[in-house]
Length: 441
Ligand SMILES: C[S@@+](CC[C@H](N)C(=O)[O-])C[C@H]1O[C@@H](n2cnc3c(N)ncnc32)[C@H](O)[C@@H]1O
Image 1 (tube, rainbow, N blue to C red):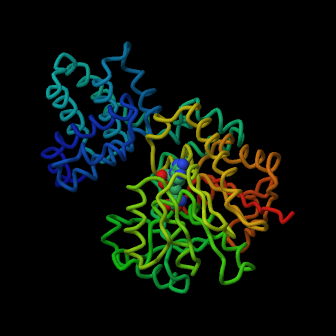
Image 2 (image 1 turned 45 degrees about the horizontal axis):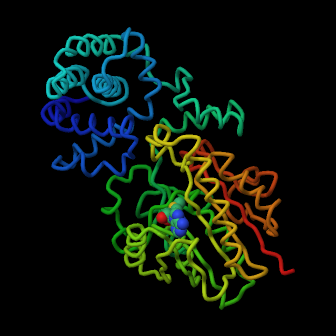
Image 3 (image 1 turned 180 degrees about the vertical axis):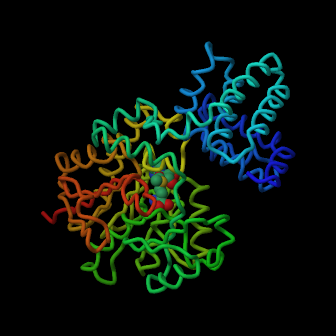
């Protein structure tokens, strides 16, 4: 780290670090998401400190298991939770961030004094100094092949994908996800790739390696594109593969639609979309997104279990609420917030939603079901239950047209993406996407 950065960190970090400490505690013991608490903890901080808080807390959560293992070498009995968090943040800075070692140690000690934990300053000082001295012993969890996913979650992945792939998935969560975008006009993809210095992925999404502040990027305010992971863009593309035969009167329902990535895709392709979600605040974001991109949809604020349409739909996209474990690269707090029971509850809800959606479809209609989850209970098990327990039949997914390998299809013809896939491009979110048809009978 250069001198200028060291000076900057030393003068501004105590406040940024107190915010990071508070946020880490809110996640690990308050069981609250980073996203829900972030704006309140960073209130009053300079923009550069805001970025530091985000980076420090994300890195600490990504590497938490590794950091705790490393700390075990130096600590016999665990100190109080807040002191332990100060140590974790200190180790994250020493091993994974550019913070000058002496700044990481000094500011950690100062943090304790702020929080009236002066009795532990000696311990923290001594431990962090040892970590600085032993830095070369612990370069990174991936070098040491340490699994940095809590066991309850990791075990499920080993069961679903085998040990090697589960380890690859876990390792992929150590790196922050790149920013992917969907361009409004398909014909303009190459032009936007050039303007944004982005890579065009085989599926047609653009990937920006260093996005910085997204709203400042060219074309964002003009509504020429929106942020959407390459995997998240696939369900709407799969739906488009099935609706050509329905003609100009084709009516599509985007159930669970907010904040609207998929609604925007469908609208941009000229589809008439009814876009339903039960959350007023998320629906407001969807409205703003449509306004920014000059796209349109008919918005419905409703709970799908209390709603019935006037006429049925040719096609429905159900991007159901789920554990979101396919997005841990973007949300490293998730493994510490979710439980196996949450996954069970989500799965139950998804099945009920699909059963409800079937009634909204015309005979011959298409249902696309997607979840950004890696858990077998949510995607594949629900897919099987639908095939066994309802009259829906599988509809094909054309992987060549999507630009993805056919090996991503499972035995039932559903598409599975994993964060460890497309490693050469920087991965993609984990999704399960299945297409079904309602028979005419
Ligand atoms: C995975 S998100 C949808 C993301 C969205 N499809 C997109 O691409 O931007 C799931 C959504 O389901 C909505 N939701 C959850 N339960 C619902 C219900 N019973 N009725 C309607 N919407 C519901 C949530 O408000 C949330 O916006």
